[in-house]
Amino acid sequence: MSNIGDETRHPDEWWEKPANLDFAFYLPEEMEGWLQGAGYELEETLVRAPNPEVAVGTRRSYLFARKVL
Image (cartoon, rainbow, N blue to C red; front, side, top):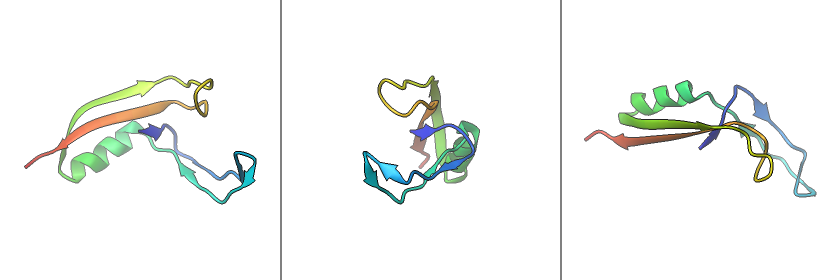
């Protein structure tokens, strides 16, 4: 699972506590290339719309792949 985009977000607070985190966003095509370059066969890529009621309001991608033996 990946948040879709080409940015890095750095919140200073997480659940009302100080935080020092980086969240990297990637494009599905970018991740597909990395998987294929590592010898995985891409099965399916799903993209879903933001759902701010459940999580951060960002588009998400889900990539399903298997290792080619």
